[in-house]
Image 1 (cartoon, rainbow, N blue to C red):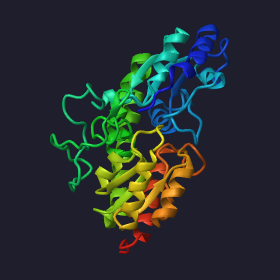
Image 2 (image 1 turned 120 degrees about the horizontal axis):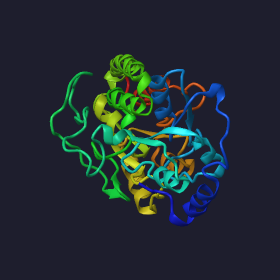
Image 3 (image 1 turned 180 degrees about the horizontal axis):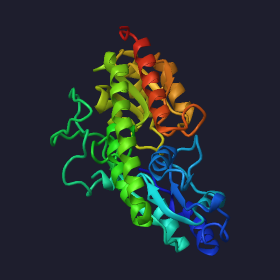
Image 4 (image 1 turned 90 degrees about the horizontal axis):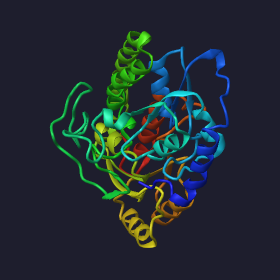
Length: 336
């Protein structure tokens, strides 16, 4: 994963150190405590467990790739007064820890991937829901099968089940992240611990139901191949029986080589790649080149959301399921 370059991050860390992440306390609406998440899906999970007693902020703006995000002072001001900071983990947003250290922040940091046993050197057993190509139900707990993919880069491996950080794209993993999140809130605010735990249970149940809904939507697509903009979809594809045949950016934030793009075009012309799925956070030029040269149609999916129509986690996942279904059923050989 591409983390922030040292030279790019250094001025931000200096600002954080000098200003205390925002240049002084900012009033909080209604006097509520502040919790911060790095990306919109985490913020929605956090909001669902924290309840109305908290102000929840998102650091990375919608439409911005977390893989190349460089925080501005305005982004750091969102950390002012934060009592809890939630990160995706597994190398996805390590820059947050450096920023908090520069701020001398005493916010509690909750690493969601680590709580699920996801990340290189973190897990002793594969995280739940890590079957590849197995027809399992929402409550199934897989064995020790693992999936190999692109090698690691700067601290985590892309496309490797149990190590890749895009865990929230499986509703079952999202559901299982909620109980540890409730405990993180309870550690900061023990007086309301039972409320956090109850909301976590209720939301987890709704996510299991969401998983069943998405499984029904995607059932006709089992075994179908697709090309991704970057390797965000391993848990989603594994959960619903899809096959990620290739990726334009196997390592997010690193531009594909001309040789790699040529290989994609060749495979596309041979009819081996299905549909190409691009993302709002992904530069469109490379995807358009591959699509045009290989005769592949483009369909938009979104791993991050946070925009109208995709503000909540369930809305985001329904959008993606509908996009995959529409795209892959429209692809050659994809009709029901």
